[in-house]
Length: 330
Image 1 (cartoon, rainbow, N blue to C red):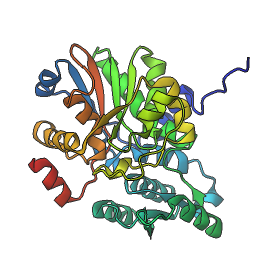
Image 2: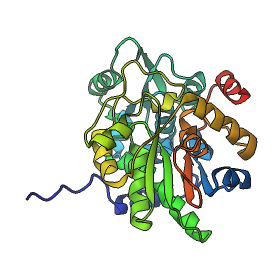
Image 3: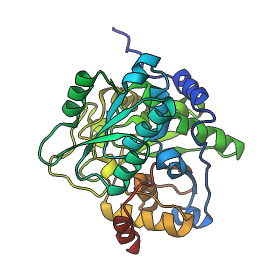
Image 4: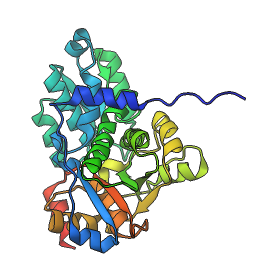
């Protein structure tokens, strides 16, 4: 019998990333709210990555990756493809590391995410994701043409390890509160945040269950976990969760997630909008649709949390004002 290959990242990789990010990334708090606890019949520990640099967890992985480039690579610059949060994380990390940044973004990306990316000094190249253009092909072509280092959004061990520092903080902060975490709900697109958080949590709280949460139609990770092989998102699917529209799980991220995740959860756009409104009303936090899916799963009863303690990651807060106002109005 052939031994199973080692996973792409280890707990030591996450701990190393935490050392690199110390004093650079924000150690976001764990928040409690009695109304939310009462609503689910258990305890929710809210991890607001909306308070992270650039408004999402993506800065963690981007900085862990870009800060390790050698001086010549930094001078040539970096390139990334993203609908917005990875774009801003890469732009900010590149600026802090003294590297030019070129970002391939869909033409229909939220305006606030484009503005945030430009504000960090990056250059944007647009593409038509509805018209069949491949962001990967556009980015890889420009990387080869200009000699740029490609910073992938999730399928990179350094990116996954950086995102895992969010999970490392969760277990340390829960321990400081003398609370045992039973499960962790994580927004999931390509699976990098899930893989990193799962790696950190499994090492410190091996009994805790990990649930990636996705929007309907883009439940490729949930279906992949159920089948044991990577599945694609539904080609005709649409969702307000622009940050979570990856076409399929990453190859490396799925290697981690199939080992460590209990199963996937799926929420509707209506569930998401309701969770955004709850975060605004009860937590006083602005959460974008993709960032609210884990809270949506908890509040809509996709997982029975009665008598249990669940850590909920709010992964991002970059949302256009008009879209946000419409969501929380209902």
